Image (cartoon, rainbow, N blue to C red; front, side):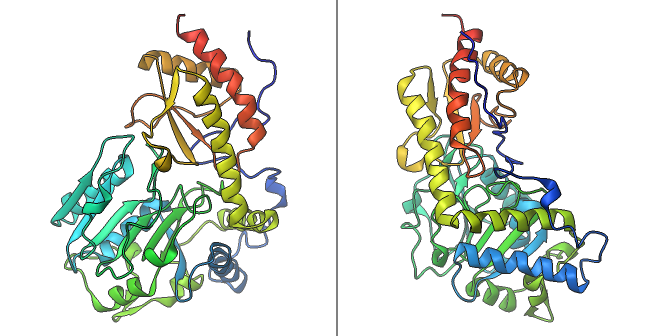
Length: 371
């Protein structure tokens, strides 16, 4: 029978993600709207975005945080164009975004790259990564639901830099910051913020590279982080390269305030893990659904990707039915990924909403897949 109780919040999209519980756009501090981002009030808001991020994440001393254009993609590209070329490059890819970084490094920057590739659902062999080279990888494969289990595979005495796309892992997973030289993410993922802006975090080692290495290729203005061979420190103190949306900044600050109010990153990680446990129990109890990730230690607790015993058309019909019923929006797998479901389990999603979703998943499956 069709379930009667629907999730109060049907937003399970993997990006932009659900707003925090209790979110109200009218509660935002919009005193910066209509003001220059370079005004005292505008720059103070941007600087707070950087400083509060560093504080909440517990970044090591000397790590710099900046707001950059182009969402997570812009932040990764900024790092690649500015830092690569000084030594060899290893790139890991096991889903679509890692594949994009590999393509840009080889086809656009035309670098010789050691590629470590794996199919959706599994990781490449981490033991084969050469840390004498610069290493680029996603911490969590947003489109595959597969994460690296920890940072033990990254040596402390590495010669190269580690460039980590952490857009669907930061604020939801334990991150060994000392092992990461560049970290990028976007507001619209784990915190449920607005799109268009990226966060770029640099270690002292990354700053040293910026000040000692000049790439051979022309540098687009939006990617330039140095002036006369020195880091433009203003970028990491609220002086953005281009004009940001101050409304989006206010929204991000609201999300950071919420993280602090509920107990910090430890609590957002706890909530993400609890949400994953809800889905894990459902998967264990039903033989027609399974995780795309092949091993438990690599299973994402944010972008949870699921495979079904169903044809691609049946999966589409199921997704359309759930959308029509107002039960779950935007839960189809990424366009490049195997057909299936992708359900966001980050901290802004309520555990009870996931519990209320599960009977609907079973109902929709039985509606579209003949017994």
